[in-house]
Image 1 (cartoon, rainbow, N blue to C red):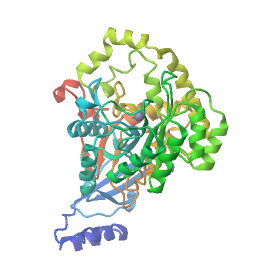
Image 2 (cartoon, rainbow, N blue to C red):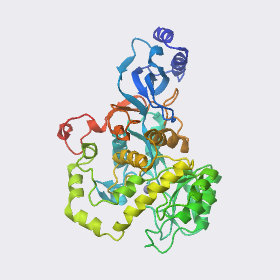
Image 3 (tube, rainbow, N blue to C red):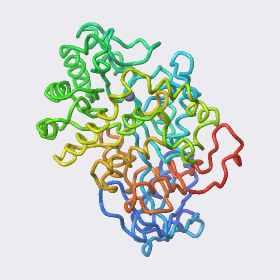
Length: 467
Ligand SMILES: [Zn+2]
């Protein structure tokens, strides 16, 4: 019998997994085994890369990983020789917004739909971003998407975790027009958090900002405290949009679990980093690519095929339009962004040096901030700020996964989903090599990469299809 024969050829660990897979029910799925051979492994835990490894995938999961010389598999297994290639976990972007735009036109009420959300999740996957956390601007359709993903466990696009509707102080900064999400009192905040938890949010988001002082009032601390306490009472973590040093200090004191941007109003006193470390507050997203994008009238990579393959020619033309560039340059706050970016990079470096736990997140999804591409730009900026490529990769994989217990992804180990990124060049030698994407796997299945994508055109309309 097929299984018995297979069992003889597997090492004990893999044999065990093969047997387990047959116990799922009367209609046990056919065991399809894929073996990736001879690659250099970057496992997402922070461990140094290991040469000449193999891994075995069955029914979407990693059932064995180890030295290529020790892999034993059935002759029916599909084998892929990845000599000279690098295999790492799929990236996780801890801060995105889904379904807000069509091209660079942003309007939640016009564009938020399940279809648009799914389209963007496909684009994230093409860039090797196999999981995203969406940060507080979701309509209820997100819960349908998530329910379906978690039922099968094997989506053909990026997995989603959501903060549902984040909490906005009435009349203050945050959220999106068209989504009812503002509260005026602590009692309303508590009730809103309870409703969000009941809907199935994975964590809770709040905003505390005033748009460079243009808005009269930031969220009062009585409300942020109510949000944090209500979420914690229900076992949910909390994540905050911040801008100001003072707010970061106070929220850390109140027990916030993570910041989704850097402090940008000044170079932060290292005291904040030490406090975050002591309290276990994470810098889950530094959104350096977001801050960088605001410093340009025209994004410097609009003609880079790694970018332009993911957007329609109409979007590139709209970005290049002279009127748009003039409008951006004339905007009230345009001159303030270079300093905000410098502060963000300095503050990120200080946190990293002081042992604060940090992830990788971009805040892509609103207009002008592009799914997938920004994750690779973010990694590059994190390295520019002062960490190593291996540290940046670990932030974007194993560390990000840990924040909300997405413990079936983020690292390469037995039992995890086979959400993988195969690269032609070494990302530990040069972080820009995360762009040399050879293949992307989600739950063991290949999905089209950005080099096999040509948005808004026939597939051959983007030139040579390789990294
Ligand atoms: Zn955001």
